[in-house]
Length: 261
Ligand code: PEP
Image 1 (tube, helix red, strand yellow):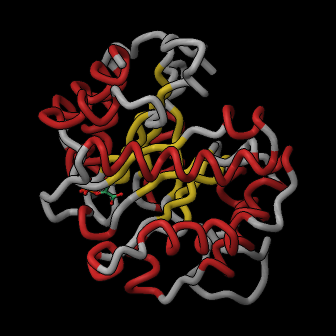
Image 2 (cartoon, rainbow, N blue to C red):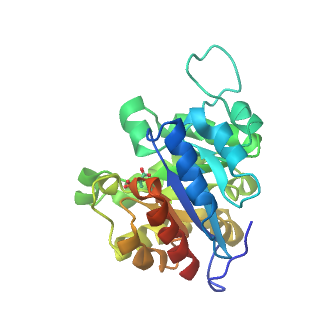
């Protein structure tokens, strides 16, 4: 892990994580990884890419010798068994995957994933030494109704509430307002900072060390033209990037901006 270069107030390193979602075939994935592998990664920035399941093992092999880590986009909470179509954490670990996105709003919307299940997935990931990248965030309706803090508080309590401080300190949180994902709408810098500070405050119930250690990423139409402002916030420790992670120059620019934050 690279060291933090921001300030004493900086809780952690900066992380730029690319969620490719259901995009890229084998040849395209290989080409994108090749382009990412030659990007220069500034000191203090950690880069993660999350291709689709079929390409994870190849991505790990291709990125050998680089500092870029490979994450999955989901996992099953059980380690093995009759769960047709599912992929377990030990399976991911066996091919060199280091992290896994869980609780993404698209998993919640299209696959009925709840924070209760997500909590089990997080426990499985931590048990096997993988880093959960836990996504939380309110819908447009909840934001308009002024319930965004309450919604995110409840998500965190349900998904992370059973973890002890040591386990919690190994989690990465991604605040992704649902209304900003893939829509071109972005939370303002102030909206992002105030929610990240709120999440950090919730984490501080487990002690100031935990609150400092857990990176909180922003996700939702984060692009080179808005990232500098978002990343400059004290409690924003990088980004979970969807659309812009599919293009090496754009993703490279986000990595560069994270290095300047
Ligand atoms: C995401 O899906 O996690 C995401 C942030 O997507 P986008 O950047 O495309 O809004």
